[in-house]
Image (cartoon, rainbow, N blue to C red; front, side, top):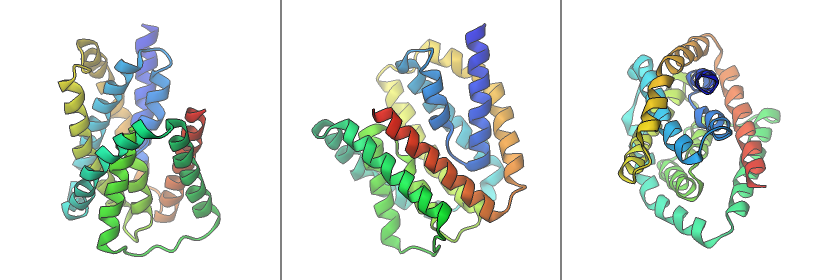
Amino acid sequence: METLLYIGAVMLLAGFIQGFSGFGSVLLSLPLLALFMDVKTAIPLTAMVGVLLTVLLLVPLWKDLEWRRIWPLLIGAFPGVPLGVYILKSLNGRIILIFLGLLLTGYALYGLFFPVRRRELGAGWIYFTGFLSGCFGGAFSAAGPPVIVYVSLQPWRKELIKVTLQGYYFISGLMVVAAQAWTGLVTDRVWELFLYSLAPLVVGTYAGHFFFGRIREETYRRVILVLLLGLGVFTIAHAR
């Protein structure tokens, strides 16, 4: 019972963060769940949770969804994934994680203390971002940061930023869950915990989205930078 209550609390908080910012649920839930369950259970559980969260957020944001902004990211990611896997096998994984953590931390600190010029980036950048995302996903299952940085540099409305992240995470998350199911990682136990997580996830997600609708654009961008800073610090600590 204590375990189930703990899972419920983690999922409630993960849903709130994802509902508010559009990302961060895996950053929060995976390390916390891995404290008291096997990582081979925690990883597919968080992957399934991630897909559900994107669906919950796509519903209220559907009118803002523009697939033309998402498909280039996915196209760019395809060649990046195998390269990322190769890098993981060839280089020291600790060095890769530290490099990613320093990159995210540096960008977040710069954005928090110095004004970042936001402008519509050229078409080539979106494919490059997708490629980097694929590399990061293949190397250490962290495909999100390049896309988050890319959208934070754009002069988009906060709704467009958030829904673009959800559309990308939805397609890429489905591919991850399908691959994990194919390899037998999605067990009956994972399904049991996923079903238990549904109620706190729904409550947390829509609570976070409620507060999202009541903040200014600039405040939302600063929240993104703060979460990126946390992601960078966590990545560096995870690499030690």
